Image 1 (cartoon, chains in turn brown, purple):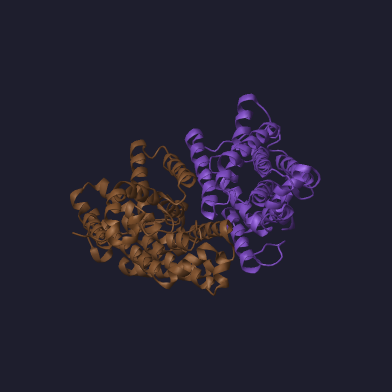
Image 2: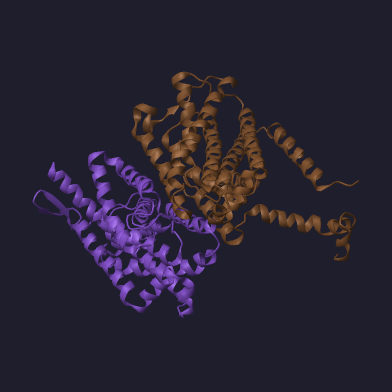
Amino acid sequence: MNLRPGYLSALGFLALVLGLVILPQIVPDPFAVDIFIRVLLFAFIGVAWNLLGGYAKQLSLGHAAYFGLGAYTSTILLIRYEISPWIGLLAGGLVAMLASLPIGALCFRLRGPYFTISTIATAQVLMLLFLKFRDFAWGAEGTTIPNLGDSPWMMQFDDKASYYYVVLALLGVGLAVTFWVERSWIGYYLVALGEDSDAAEAVGVNVARIKRDIYMISAFLTGLAGTFYIQYIYFIDPNTAFNFNISVEAALVSIVGGVGTMWGPVVGAVLLEPASALVQSWLGASHGGVQLTLYAVILMAVILWRPDGLLGFFTDIYERIFRASPRGATAPSAIPGMALDE
Amino acid sequence: MEAVVAQALVNGLLIGGIYALVSIGVTLIFGVVKIVNFAQGEFVMLGMYISYWLATHIGLDPVASLVVSMPVLFVTGVLLQRVLIRRVLGLGDMPQIFLTFALSLLLINVALLLFTADYRTVQTSYSDSAIRIGPVYIGVARLIAFVVAMLLTGALDVFLRVTDLGKAMRAASQSPEVAMLMGINPDHVFSVAVGLSLALAGAAGSLIMPFYSVNPSVGQVFVLMAFVVVVLGTLGNVRGAFIASLMMGIAESLGIQFIGADSGLIVVFAVLLLTLAVKPSGLFGGRTR
């Protein structure tokens, strides 16, 4: 039987989806499901970040801005107007997307590290504004999300598995968008712009427009993550919603996994989130610095040793183990000329 | 009213001198090595802890402990360049930005594990004394910090303009290839640049210790301020960074005085965003980058 790589990867993908769907049924332990949810959430945020940071090479450290805007939009709609967070989810994404227009217009005036710095500033300004204007959204105290019991229409569930499926679906959306972007004309423009933005501009790529569009998509997805997270933890305040660590982890999972690859952020989240959750549960919350120390060491090691990310490392190992001999055996039938070289 | 404004102006100017030390360090590394050091604030934090421990253990005055903190941080800077930064030169934005960013995370969190999140202060004989000039009070500790900061800034400016090494540094920042052809060893020049930059950060830490409390995340304030200053004062321009630092110190101080104690940073970021909107090349830049 001759399985072509296309079928193989399609089969592998189906197996992966099936495995992910039945995972909370096999491992129903709430602590484990909580870790799965974190993995999927940060994989999703990483996928959103990666569209801008990985494909367009615009390294943002301010994605907490969109996370927080999404979170506050749905919460204000829910508490003030009793509008379902499902609608709030889309509204939050749209608010985040619209906010990316003026923010992008300012920050894209700077390049490289200074773009990064200006994005930090935007997220911090939003946090400070939400802290300052108490009448608008509860100020520094924040608010709890009213618990309505098991009400799926209000995105509230008794069991953690349901939250798991929501965030799994979000990740699916993020990956589908990435898949589409990679294969559309935007994807080619992004590669050109990421390689050399001046050269891309010179051959007629509208660099400003592409950056704006990809930033809007990235912000929209990050806004969705914000709504989900706040619905999941039932609490919001400016420090949670606009937390700098959100911006850091968005970039971190992508870099550790591999920037500018579809599965990189997923691999990064799978490696980082369980490790950090386990370290935290072993040492307790009293050791405040442990998690970030761990992240910092991993980030440095990856940058110095494998700047293209660990996805590439795993692919190399896989190729070395599984491809070396079978490929050599099948290659002659596929490409006759190659047989001479083997 | 005028007295309040005058007081805010003086306070802002004095702290602006400290911002200048940190910002000039950032701009020096950027100018010569072409790296933005996200960990610069953490070296201010290290300088502060060095002065704190020297003051509490052997009773050394924080300002005098400059003689320890500056050399220690100079050596740290040389090692930083030789061990870490050198490996990411020419590798593109991602490794360059996130290497020093990771270093910043590491230093903050290791400090948190070692020293806890407690705020620590050093009480000196002059910590609470002030000179009165008309309606304005000038804190003695702040004045000493400002004067020493000015002396160090001036010394650096002279060093860059007069000495061979300083000239080599400026040459390497303008064109590394040509500088190499002229026999300048870039490794050496880069190490000294990073060393000097960190020594300035350490000096800033020691100088503010008599009137500022230290905790592991204290550096964040300084590095954010330095970034805003460096953008405002045109990237890689030492004198631009100096003038912009004094301006930002004053802007922050006026913000705290007239909008609220927690509004200093809002004013600073507002200035950054306004600069980007109006003149993204900074106050001293020519055309837009």
